[in-house]
Image (tube, rainbow, N blue to C red; front, side, top):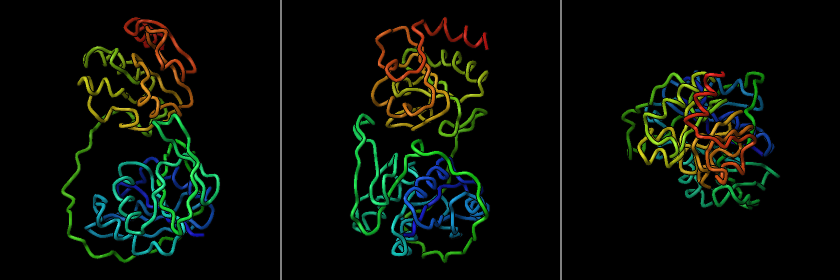
Length: 308
């Protein structure tokens, strides 16, 4: 068997979740090739070559792969797809953008957001907002799989794998990458953070999120939020944790003023340790918390910050 992992990167470094995806690919068995497609992305290829389990890296560098547009990236993958038994990518916006196009063109079923590998053709994936785990078996000749990074540990460093150049496919001319605006913060990015402090509707206002920011600064943590807090305009969309936001699994997740709707739990319940602060003793968040405090957050959080 041969497995192709399509890596998400910024042309310099691999994005969070890629090494976890490689761990999943290792569990599938077979030789692993990582595809790095982009513009001026040799550094990313070098980073991929240093990941344990990688046998070879394919580097495809061309202007029209900047921004990883679905049309051009899918065409590139389809040009080499028949050499592989598995085509794998992270289940991030990157993978969700082009992998369905690859699966449709190959006339196979995509297996989305796997959280475990039981055999080369059998995978576990969450359904119903994570309330049920489905074990699915694919008989397709080529398996197109996206990986939920929180289900797998990141791969470590290994011996440097060889890097080979791959000729680009002609520009499809269907879309053009114009630019990307990234939110800038001194705090860690949500999906890569070891500690996350999240607030919900109970925070009451955008101004009150400063209480959480003070706690996060003490802990070196990222700040997240429930969809209710985002929809209320307390914080921007990129703070959202949950089924329709970011899926996270930090070492420590502190949920403050979050009731614990199913959609939110689906995005954070794989965290190693969960701490919940809520004045409602019946809040669903307590069902997944390792530690909980029934207390007014406006009293508890400043006291916790002062103690730290």
